[in-house]
Image 1 (cartoon, rainbow, N blue to C red):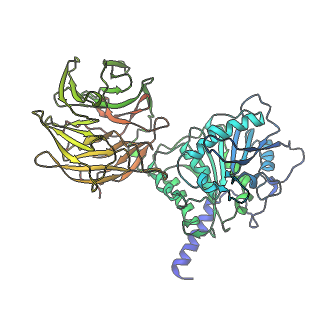
Image 2 (cartoon, rainbow, N blue to C red):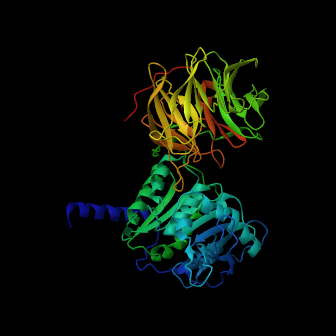
Image 3 (cartoon, helix red, strand yellow):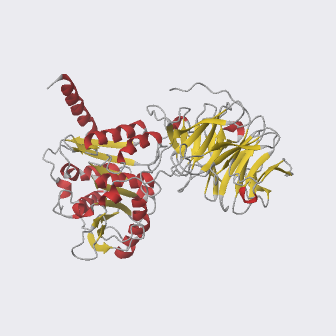
Length: 591
């Protein structure tokens, strides 16, 4: 053994001892005493059925077993644990014997009264006997995105409640997920995508490799605002290493990322290969750890001493998203005046709202369908109105001026000199409207610089660059302002995060702070890009669905306003925003 190998072996042994602390030694990896039927322990019942009417995963059929503990009396909703690849866990002679373990742990008080749902992956059968079935395990389990989580939440759990005559709690603290290999990453991703529905995760030999983009998760954990999850992990030093990656290395990377981000996580390392023997043997300990201190809520890390996560540097740890207004048709545009007062546009009702002194939105303008808003250095509110093919502006008293006609502007930005740059998605152009109201094309998308849909537009605080979001890709384009105020040297510069099944980020509005970090509204959340164009953090969305617009406002420009669907939200930040028409000298970035 060379020096490097000996060093790795020593580190591995030390890590194994640390990660496995509190877990009884079981070198044979066989079911222990808690997986054996014990005298006097009430025994739950199991109901089995086939589920083949899923709207989320149509055309699939799968076996489902439901464990109902003896203590469940229907007086209140039960907790739930969902087992992926359920057939292997529900067997009372297998390596996990989950129903026996749950009988024992519920009886001793280590778990609350918990329904177990054991679900297999879906299969689409052939229409004739000689046709091969389509197996959905990798599709459902290995990828990122919320499809499988939606299947569990919208389809399976309601079906279980109906078929088994049980009521399951909707509180995320009462709901957990477990699985091994592809089922292990599936359990994690479902909770990651829907922390409003699941807070507890047990992942054995998780497939956090590039089978369908799962290797992305390690970096996402570091970048995304921490979520209220508790994660138990297990893997073996002899786990497989194949075309998609090394399982053991991938699980170590996931755990290191969870530690970095301050998650409540535990990693138990054994010596097994890619099998469920070790995980099955420690199921009682994993469930005890996942459900410890119940019903104490699981909360997200807020950063602080010992937690190095970058994104928490931007967030006020004492603040969360607060609802500003709701019930609008579709909020798509935001702007703040020099006092930081928020204005926003509801494109369906055609109204523009302004926050009053009481913090409540009041109508500022009627009959003004505006997709882009921006204040200028003259204190007027400028608006893009593509349906009327014009740009208009209003004074504080609401008096209207037509700035330009015959233009299909979607979004716009006003400089300190009163120049207006605006996007024209249908022609895939950026236009400049100069101070004497003459307009000219300053960027045209071509085969060489192909932008799908020019959505939001923003100017850097030093008025050096114009940034344009492409709703249909993962790029924010950066364009330099030339001596003639035209745009040159366009580059797909800011590299946004996207889901593995699509490159469409629905990137829209942008806001920039005084350090040059750009906050971009996307379907994944509010992505924070540094000056070199890298995503360094992702702020959690205020609700499911894409975020459409963001802007800094409020006192001192320390509040980030965001729009999503029919609602407007606000959140205090540790950073200070900028106003596009008030130039700011930016610090040199770390390259």
